[in-house]
Amino acid sequence: MMEIKIPPVRVEASFNQKTGYVDVRARNVEYQITELPEHGGRGDKLTPLEAFIAGLTSCEAIMARMVASQMGLKELGEIRVDANAEFGIGEGLKRLKIRYVLKGVDKEKAETIVDLVKRMCPIYNTLSRTLEIEDEIVVS
Image 1 (tube, rainbow, N blue to C red):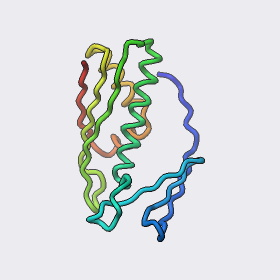
Image 2: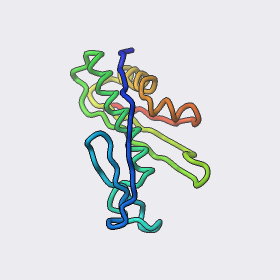
Image 3: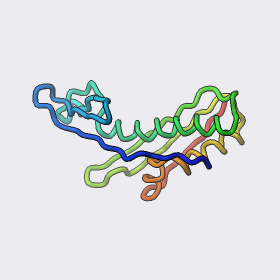
């Protein structure tokens, strides 16, 4: 497994009364988070839960590209990671299903890539310690 050093992460978030967004800053990147309208938000940006799951899926997609590159797989085409999650108030994440779509490789190579990604991704590892995660691998 390749060695990857992860620097400490610092994120600041503050509710902006004028816009109704939560302004988020990480490094020199700024973006806004909101809630769905039925929960008092504007609904035109990611919700905190969507951003949380987006962090997982994007981390895994980046890791999959890194793993494929390390394996010398130049034929690997699209890498897509889809997730469906269910949360409960006071319960947190109750259910998580991840679907890995890899194009340009056979099933065996896809399974190897996904296995390595699941072992390397810090977000996946954090979640898998407390939750059984369903997954599906699709190749084409």
